[in-house]
Amino acid sequence: MSIEHKLYLKKLKKEKVFIISIQILITLLFLLIWEVLSKYNIINSFIFSSPSKIINTIYNLYLERILFISIWVTVKEILISFILGSLIGFVLAVIFYMVPILKKIFDPFLTLINSLPKVSLGPLLIIWLGANTSSIIVMSLLINTIVTLISIYNGLINTDSYKIKLFQTFKATKLQTLIYLVIPHNKETILSSLKLNISMSLIGVIMGEFLVSKAGIGYLILYGTQVFNLNLVMSGIILIMIISFIIYEFINFLEKKK
Amino acid sequence: MTNILTIKNLTKKYHTPEGETLAIKDITLNIKKGEIIGIVGSSGCGKSTLLNILAGLDKETSGEIIKTNFKDAYMLQSDALLPWLTVLDNACLGLKLKNIKTDENIEYVKKLLKNFGLESFMDAYPSSLSGGMKQRVALIRTLAIKPDIVYLDEPLSALDYVTRLMITDEIHSILKKMKVTTILISHDIAECTSFCDRIVVLSKRPAVVKNIYDIKLKKPSTPSKNRKDELFNYYYDLIWSDLDK
Ligand SMILES: Nc1ncnc2c1ncn2[C@@H]1O[C@H](COP(=O)(O)OP(=O)(O)OP(=O)(O)O)[C@@H](O)[C@H]1O
Ligand SMILES: [Mg+2]
Image 1: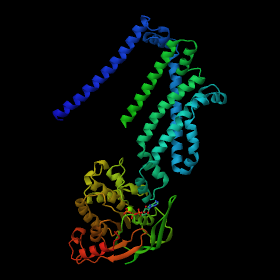
Image 2 (image 1 turned 90 degrees about the vertical axis):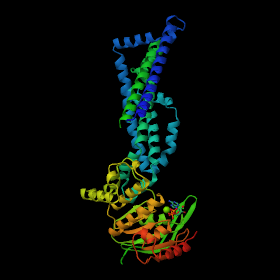
Image 3 (image 1 turned 90 degrees about the horizontal axis):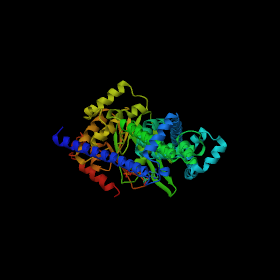
Image 4 (image 1 turned 135 degrees about the vertical axis):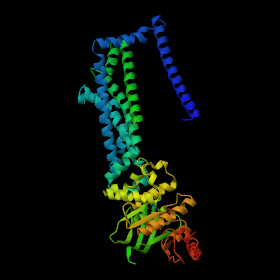
């Protein structure tokens, strides 16, 4: 490696370290100001809570054995709806791709469902499925499946037409074309729609928990609101932020690994 | 020589919501076993359409195509290499899709890669190849299934002039050595005249056969030497004057 290149790499690293330090500094400063303002009652600590109160609340949740149960309930719901939504969305996208007439027939219905605010279906779900986990998961599926379906489908139909023709020249079957061309060609699209799906699942699950649940972080927030315990509400929000951050970083990690 | 392929009164119309296009009108042509036949005609006259129909990618509107028992392979206008496969795997794609990727056939592909000077790039990915190398891989992919007849649609159109001249000789010698019947489309009359045994001149759309020339040079040799043949210019001028411009 030449000296110039070493210097260049060093400069890159230096910049990265600088950015991260500033980010940490901003966060700490924010927390500190928040803490001080609420401690000296410059802001109403009952409504705005404070970092120490939030940590305290989370610690109490832990002591009461509610913390990990709540996290697990929510994470489980996210995982189930993510896996189901991705699978159903992917399979439907492939079917629509393989049988274009189906896509043409169902197109307006998809648009209709996609443009409907899903939360409006909440009351119906509760009546049909009961106030339980299945309602939450169906709510999340309503949100994530169609988005996955549409984004994967759009990738599939944009497969390079010359390459499709190439496969035809070798008299490849439709299945061969799908496995050896269309899917590998759309690996990036599929991965990025899975990434999108994770955030969709998170939104769907929290929305579902607001509507029906008796457990989970969405429920903690809802309960906190009902008893006007804003420390609990803030703690719930922080926990959701942490969960979504971890999931996001995990996907980034998977993406970089391949 | 016997006919390997006979085209009788072939007509092709395309239908689109905007209307219909008559692309090919009543083409009759015999393709002889082992010959290299060139097809020239102005852009959009229906040359690719003809190959698509011969290769079974498209259906004729009327007429008849009588195929003897042969294996055909089609090299498209673009190389269409798959970026996620190595050069070797790209070259073996046809073998894989036809379920004949045997050790013996892989060895054969490696031999072809070697013949075309791509031996050291076998495990490389297409992105690291030059345009000329990519075209060669595409050609090897076409030849790998050991076809009796190949359809080449402007196989070298993406290349610069010098590379083109160099590759032309290699391809010509391999086709002749393997005794592959070849139908070649080219915009380049000089290339066609130096490369082919016969040349079919098509009219503007709808394509009809205007003329067929047997290219009988004084001393037929490699394409690059053919360009210096006494009779080369004679054929070149004939075809040039025939072409609808
Ligand atoms: N799938 C299709 N649907 C409708 N029209 C088509 C289709 N394919 C080709 N055509 C029309 O048929 C005519 C002949 O097209 P073709 O691709 O065979 O021309 P070509 O001789 O190969 O041209 P070029 O030299 O530019 O490659 C053109 O007018 C084209 O617009
Ligand atoms: Mg063409």
